[in-house]
Length: 266
Image (cartoon, rainbow, N blue to C red):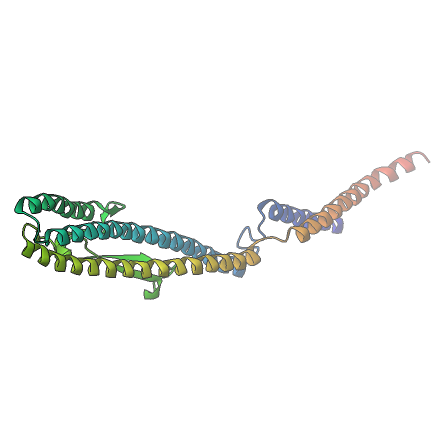
Protein backbone atom coordinates (compact mmCIF):
# COMPACT_ATOMS: atom_id res chain seq x y z
CA UNK A 1 0.00 0.00 0.00
CA UNK A 2 2.93 2.34 0.77
CA UNK A 3 4.38 1.78 -2.72
CA UNK A 4 0.98 2.45 -4.31
CA UNK A 5 0.64 5.68 -2.33
CA UNK A 6 4.07 6.84 -3.47
CA UNK A 7 3.15 5.95 -7.04
CA UNK A 8 -0.03 8.02 -6.89
CA UNK A 9 1.82 10.98 -5.37
CA UNK A 10 4.55 10.82 -7.99
CA UNK A 11 2.00 10.50 -10.79
CA UNK A 12 0.06 13.54 -9.54
CA UNK A 13 3.25 15.58 -9.20
CA UNK A 14 4.39 14.52 -12.67
CA UNK A 15 1.02 15.48 -14.15
CA UNK A 16 1.14 18.89 -12.42
CA UNK A 17 4.66 19.53 -13.69
CA UNK A 18 3.64 18.55 -17.22
CA UNK A 19 0.64 20.90 -17.08
CA UNK A 20 2.84 23.79 -15.97
CA UNK A 21 5.42 23.05 -18.66
CA UNK A 22 2.82 22.87 -21.42
CA UNK A 23 0.96 26.02 -20.30
CA UNK A 24 4.00 28.02 -19.29
CA UNK A 25 2.15 29.01 -16.13
CA UNK A 26 2.62 27.77 -12.60
CA UNK A 27 -0.94 28.87 -11.69
CA UNK A 28 -3.47 26.97 -13.77
CA UNK A 29 -6.22 26.84 -11.16
CA UNK A 30 -7.02 28.53 -7.87
CA UNK A 31 -5.78 25.49 -5.97
CA UNK A 32 -2.26 26.03 -7.30
CA UNK A 33 -1.90 29.40 -5.52
CA UNK A 34 -5.13 31.13 -4.48
CA UNK A 35 -3.47 34.34 -3.28
CA UNK A 36 -1.14 34.48 -6.27
CA UNK A 37 -4.05 33.95 -8.66
CA UNK A 38 -6.02 36.83 -7.12
CA UNK A 39 -3.08 39.21 -7.41
CA UNK A 40 -2.27 38.03 -10.93
CA UNK A 41 -5.84 38.50 -12.17
CA UNK A 42 -5.87 42.07 -10.84
CA UNK A 43 -2.59 42.71 -12.61
CA UNK A 44 -3.94 41.25 -15.85
CA UNK A 45 -6.90 43.63 -15.69
CA UNK A 46 -4.54 46.53 -15.01
CA UNK A 47 -2.29 45.53 -17.91
CA UNK A 48 -5.26 45.41 -20.26
CA UNK A 49 -6.36 48.85 -19.10
CA UNK A 50 -2.86 50.28 -19.51
CA UNK A 51 -2.55 48.94 -23.04
CA UNK A 52 -5.94 50.34 -24.02
CA UNK A 53 -5.05 53.68 -22.46
CA UNK A 54 -1.90 53.69 -24.58
CA UNK A 55 -4.03 53.13 -27.68
CA UNK A 56 -6.33 55.94 -26.54
CA UNK A 57 -3.40 58.32 -26.16
CA UNK A 58 -2.10 57.39 -29.61
CA UNK A 59 -5.54 58.09 -31.04
CA UNK A 60 -5.43 61.41 -29.22
CA UNK A 61 -2.13 62.27 -30.89
CA UNK A 62 -3.62 61.41 -34.29
CA UNK A 63 -6.67 63.60 -33.60
CA UNK A 64 -4.53 66.53 -32.50
CA UNK A 65 -2.23 66.14 -35.51
CA UNK A 66 -5.24 66.13 -37.83
CA UNK A 67 -6.56 69.37 -36.32
CA UNK A 68 -3.12 70.98 -36.36
CA UNK A 69 -2.67 70.00 -40.00
CA UNK A 70 -5.89 71.82 -40.88
CA UNK A 71 -4.69 74.88 -39.00
CA UNK A 72 -1.42 74.85 -40.88
CA UNK A 73 -3.32 74.96 -44.17
CA UNK A 74 -5.57 77.73 -42.86
CA UNK A 75 -2.54 79.72 -41.81
CA UNK A 76 -1.06 79.41 -45.30
CA UNK A 77 -4.34 80.61 -46.82
CA UNK A 78 -4.46 83.57 -44.45
CA UNK A 79 -0.92 84.50 -45.43
CA UNK A 80 -1.99 84.58 -49.07
CA UNK A 81 -5.12 86.58 -48.22
CA UNK A 82 -3.00 89.12 -46.39
CA UNK A 83 -0.74 89.47 -49.42
CA UNK A 84 -3.80 90.12 -51.59
CA UNK A 85 -5.15 92.68 -49.09
CA UNK A 86 -1.82 94.53 -49.04
CA UNK A 87 -1.82 94.53 -52.84
CA UNK A 88 -5.40 95.84 -52.99
CA UNK A 89 -4.59 98.63 -50.53
CA UNK A 90 -2.23 100.16 -53.08
CA UNK A 91 -3.60 103.39 -54.57
CA UNK A 92 -2.31 102.63 -58.07
CA UNK A 93 -4.96 99.94 -58.65
CA UNK A 94 -8.25 100.49 -60.43
CA UNK A 95 -11.62 99.18 -59.29
CA UNK A 96 -11.36 96.51 -61.97
CA UNK A 97 -7.97 95.45 -60.62
CA UNK A 98 -9.34 95.17 -57.11
CA UNK A 99 -12.36 93.23 -58.31
CA UNK A 100 -10.09 90.63 -59.91
CA UNK A 101 -7.97 90.38 -56.77
CA UNK A 102 -11.10 90.10 -54.63
CA UNK A 103 -12.27 87.10 -56.67
CA UNK A 104 -9.28 85.08 -55.45
CA UNK A 105 -9.72 86.56 -51.97
CA UNK A 106 -13.32 85.33 -51.83
CA UNK A 107 -12.34 81.88 -53.06
CA UNK A 108 -9.75 81.62 -50.30
CA UNK A 109 -12.35 82.65 -47.74
CA UNK A 110 -14.63 79.87 -48.97
CA UNK A 111 -11.75 77.39 -48.78
CA UNK A 112 -11.14 78.25 -45.13
CA UNK A 113 -14.79 77.42 -44.38
CA UNK A 114 -14.61 74.23 -46.44
CA UNK A 115 -11.54 73.03 -44.54
CA UNK A 116 -13.15 73.85 -41.20
CA UNK A 117 -16.29 71.92 -42.08
CA UNK A 118 -14.61 68.88 -43.60
CA UNK A 119 -11.80 68.21 -41.13
CA UNK A 120 -12.93 65.23 -39.07
CA UNK A 121 -11.55 62.37 -36.98
CA UNK A 122 -13.66 59.24 -36.72
CA UNK A 123 -16.59 61.23 -38.19
CA UNK A 124 -16.28 63.94 -35.50
CA UNK A 125 -15.78 67.53 -36.65
CA UNK A 126 -12.64 69.01 -35.14
CA UNK A 127 -12.57 72.71 -36.03
CA UNK A 128 -16.08 73.51 -37.23
CA UNK A 129 -18.53 75.82 -35.47
CA UNK A 130 -18.03 79.31 -34.16
CA UNK A 131 -16.24 78.81 -30.82
CA UNK A 132 -14.45 75.67 -29.64
CA UNK A 133 -14.70 71.87 -29.71
CA UNK A 134 -13.73 69.82 -26.65
CA UNK A 135 -12.36 66.27 -26.56
CA UNK A 136 -11.38 64.18 -23.53
CA UNK A 137 -8.84 61.36 -23.79
CA UNK A 138 -8.79 58.48 -21.28
CA UNK A 139 -5.03 57.99 -20.92
CA UNK A 140 -4.97 55.86 -17.76
CA UNK A 141 -6.27 52.48 -16.63
CA UNK A 142 -8.29 53.89 -13.73
CA UNK A 143 -11.04 56.43 -13.05
CA UNK A 144 -9.15 59.25 -11.32
CA UNK A 145 -9.27 62.68 -12.93
CA UNK A 146 -5.53 62.59 -13.66
CA UNK A 147 -6.16 59.58 -15.91
CA UNK A 148 -7.81 61.93 -18.43
CA UNK A 149 -6.64 64.78 -20.63
CA UNK A 150 -9.07 67.31 -22.07
CA UNK A 151 -8.19 69.41 -25.10
CA UNK A 152 -10.14 72.38 -26.37
CA UNK A 153 -9.72 72.99 -30.10
CA UNK A 154 -10.55 76.41 -31.50
CA UNK A 155 -12.95 76.61 -34.43
CA UNK A 156 -11.31 77.64 -37.69
CA UNK A 157 -14.21 78.94 -39.79
CA UNK A 158 -14.22 82.55 -40.97
CA UNK A 159 -16.81 83.57 -38.36
CA UNK A 160 -14.70 82.16 -35.53
CA UNK A 161 -11.63 83.86 -36.97
CA UNK A 162 -13.41 87.20 -37.39
CA UNK A 163 -12.94 87.46 -41.15
CA UNK A 164 -16.39 86.45 -42.40
CA UNK A 165 -17.38 89.90 -43.65
CA UNK A 166 -14.15 91.36 -44.99
CA UNK A 167 -13.44 92.27 -48.60
CA UNK A 168 -10.74 94.10 -50.53
CA UNK A 169 -12.88 95.87 -53.14
CA UNK A 170 -11.55 99.24 -52.01
CA UNK A 171 -8.30 100.52 -50.56
CA UNK A 172 -10.04 101.33 -47.29
CA UNK A 173 -11.66 97.90 -46.94
CA UNK A 174 -8.34 96.29 -47.82
CA UNK A 175 -6.64 98.09 -44.93
CA UNK A 176 -9.36 96.87 -42.56
CA UNK A 177 -8.97 93.37 -43.99
CA UNK A 178 -5.25 93.40 -43.20
CA UNK A 179 -6.03 94.16 -39.55
CA UNK A 180 -8.71 91.44 -39.39
CA UNK A 181 -6.42 88.88 -41.01
CA UNK A 182 -3.64 89.71 -38.55
CA UNK A 183 -6.10 88.96 -35.74
CA UNK A 184 -7.04 85.68 -37.41
CA UNK A 185 -3.38 84.72 -37.79
CA UNK A 186 -2.84 85.35 -34.08
CA UNK A 187 -5.79 83.08 -33.26
CA UNK A 188 -4.50 80.30 -35.50
CA UNK A 189 -0.96 80.58 -34.13
CA UNK A 190 -2.26 80.42 -30.57
CA UNK A 191 -4.45 77.41 -31.34
CA UNK A 192 -1.54 75.60 -33.00
CA UNK A 193 0.68 76.29 -29.98
CA UNK A 194 -1.98 74.81 -27.70
CA UNK A 195 -2.26 71.68 -29.82
CA UNK A 196 1.52 71.33 -29.94
CA UNK A 197 1.64 71.39 -26.14
CA UNK A 198 -1.14 68.79 -25.92
CA UNK A 199 0.62 66.54 -28.44
CA UNK A 200 3.84 66.71 -26.40
CA UNK A 201 1.91 65.88 -23.23
CA UNK A 202 0.26 62.89 -24.90
CA UNK A 203 3.64 61.68 -26.14
CA UNK A 204 5.01 61.76 -22.59
CA UNK A 205 1.89 59.95 -21.39
CA UNK A 206 2.43 57.22 -23.99
CA UNK A 207 6.05 56.80 -22.90
CA UNK A 208 4.97 56.50 -19.26
CA UNK A 209 2.25 53.99 -20.16
CA UNK A 210 4.76 51.86 -22.07
CA UNK A 211 7.04 51.78 -19.01
CA UNK A 212 4.12 51.00 -16.70
CA UNK A 213 2.93 48.22 -19.02
CA UNK A 214 6.40 46.67 -19.09
CA UNK A 215 6.88 46.82 -15.32
CA UNK A 216 3.40 45.48 -14.51
CA UNK A 217 3.78 42.67 -17.05
CA UNK A 218 7.12 41.69 -15.53
CA UNK A 219 5.62 41.68 -12.04
CA UNK A 220 2.74 39.50 -13.21
CA UNK A 221 5.17 37.18 -14.96
CA UNK A 222 7.12 36.66 -11.74
CA UNK A 223 3.90 35.65 -10.00
CA UNK A 224 2.36 33.52 -12.71
CA UNK A 225 4.95 32.18 -15.13
CA UNK A 226 6.66 28.88 -14.52
CA UNK A 227 10.42 28.50 -14.09
CA UNK A 228 10.99 26.19 -17.05
CA UNK A 229 14.37 24.84 -15.90
CA UNK A 230 13.15 24.16 -12.37
CA UNK A 231 9.91 22.59 -13.57
CA UNK A 232 11.73 20.39 -16.09
CA UNK A 233 13.94 19.14 -13.25
CA UNK A 234 10.82 18.47 -11.16
CA UNK A 235 9.16 16.64 -14.05
CA UNK A 236 12.24 14.47 -14.61
CA UNK A 237 12.45 13.63 -10.90
CA UNK A 238 8.79 12.68 -10.65
CA UNK A 239 9.03 10.66 -13.86
CA UNK A 240 11.91 8.62 -12.38
CA UNK A 241 10.00 8.13 -9.13
CA UNK A 242 6.92 7.02 -11.07
CA UNK A 243 8.92 4.48 -13.04
CA UNK A 244 10.63 3.20 -9.88
CA UNK A 245 7.35 2.88 -7.98
CA UNK A 246 5.73 1.13 -10.93
CA UNK A 247 8.60 -1.36 -11.08
CA UNK A 248 8.47 -1.99 -7.33
CA UNK A 249 4.71 -2.45 -7.40
CA UNK A 250 5.01 -4.86 -10.30
CA UNK A 251 7.64 -6.88 -8.45
CA UNK A 252 5.54 -6.88 -5.28
CA UNK A 253 2.54 -8.17 -7.20
CA UNK A 254 4.57 -10.96 -8.78
CA UNK A 255 6.12 -12.23 -5.51
CA UNK A 256 3.17 -14.48 -4.42
CA UNK A 257 3.14 -16.12 -7.83
CA UNK A 258 6.89 -16.69 -7.67
CA UNK A 259 6.65 -18.18 -4.19
CA UNK A 260 3.85 -20.51 -5.28
CA UNK A 261 5.90 -21.69 -8.24
CA UNK A 262 8.85 -22.44 -5.95
CA UNK A 263 6.64 -24.42 -3.57
CA UNK A 264 5.20 -26.43 -6.43
CA UNK A 265 8.69 -27.36 -7.56
CA UNK A 266 9.74 -28.75 -4.19
